Length: 432
Length: 142
Ligand SMILES: [Zn+2]
Figure 1 (tube, helix red, strand yellow):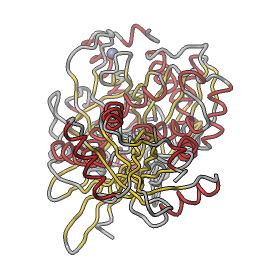
Figure 2: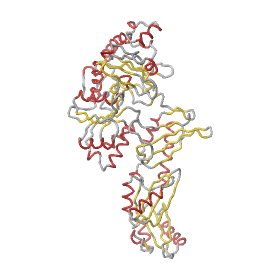
Figure 3: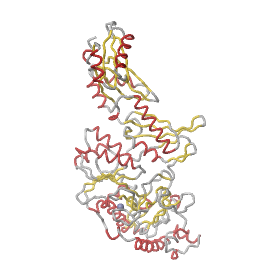
Figure 4: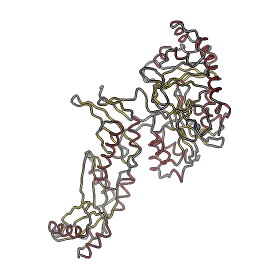
């Protein structure tokens, strides 16, 4: 069950020592980049004096804007000829944040992905259909390399084209897929409408789901729909991509690969460290990246530490699933709301179908929040009072989860906008 | 035993038109239709000559639909008849969930459709009290 038993089960003290050693190496590499060189000079930081993880906190965090400001080579620590690949983060506008990778960077990243996949049971004889975008986005290639390292047969089908996805799932009897959770929900409808039954016609065993925050309830629903185990995958392109943290067979939190990343979870306002169980922003530092070492990267992803040891025997600490992002939280009537809170309520109701949309509007100077929910055709029993009770129940459950009362509308299946990429769950028209 | 098909629909223009078009294309005749709605959505109930076929067509379209047994009673005049049926059911503690009636072609008779919780019991109670119950085919004889 371990890909690298020694490192995965290294005792905490040795793991901390390894982190310190690698942090020192990272500091040396960082001081070769023009961005950090300048930063260290300005703040009179002597990189060789940063040897403990506590010292690291003297360095101000690096933001996505900082990465952009360093375009094109501000964060490059090696000669360009050592670089074999670049990726960029999904910037919507302006200059992208570029991450360069050397041969050893690609190898160690692939190894982390292989470690993650092997840990949830992916083996050489598996058939792995990779339904993520390839290209600059790291989800596709990152997982591809890791799966190849294990020796699985990889189908690099990439995202989109649902009919072709289903054709391959069926005709190759794919056993492992990598998929965005909201797309998994939509795809299951299409599988049904092709007259296929997941447990009879498909052979899926393992699903790797990631790239967007999702609730435990969504995971359970996906597992039910596909009759396969779904494991939560976490990564971001600034920190390579997939393989930063991954669930193990116990599906109870994600192990952060601490030999490669140093994680802090902090209060996003004060940057004070959060104790276990307290939600905060994840700040990540590369510990072994050659070409683009990044120190204290503000991920904007929110999670909390789990401080109990995991029964799987891995010593790398676990974090909760991602609860949201500091920038996808919205404020409604003065209350902070994360879409995942609503996701949790909806996915817990079997009558709810696979798609929903939260719309915020401003009417006559007053904010309104509407949740449109597609109903599941199989569970409709022709009863209007029952639908009305469902509507009221969902409204009450959202109120007890978020403290606000949205307007709830039940809609026909397949009528809300869909996407084969990340789902649009919230439309905020208030600023327009 | 008669059957009724219920359809979930949003309160948006064109929903009835879509249904009637699907039924016309499949040569399904509609005998009665009722619509009830609440907050932005509703349920359309139809009585058709081929309920099983209608149900399969709707499901094939991904439209949330439900096929269920209902009681169809033929009677001479609707208002008084409705009262007598309700009385008999109430005496036997059977709840009526929904009911609607329509006058058939001859203009003399009316058919009352009743949806109850305990379908078989309601049926035997009504038969014992000499009400005439209709099957899907029989509804179309009148
Ligand atoms: Zn574990």
